[in-house]
Image 1: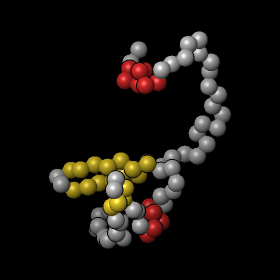
Image 2: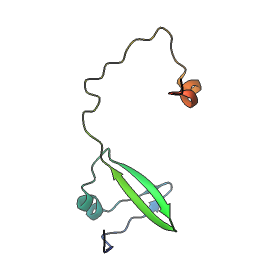
Image 3: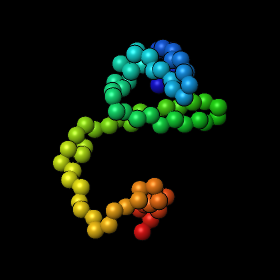
Image 4: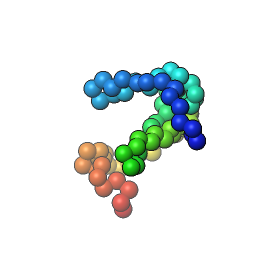
Length: 80
């Protein structure tokens, strides 16, 4: 936005923040969308990442010879 304008207010409750309906409508935010929060020069910026529906509809997990301990493998996943 070149001219910032107030389009609503949200309230913090615990670790959650309410996003006003007017903001959701203006930015076409839908269920499943993800926010990336950035702080630059004491200013908050939020990036909306749109989630494509049906991304994993055709996904069929392959069979593995060994079960994987997800907790143990988490930090090394993808580093092979």
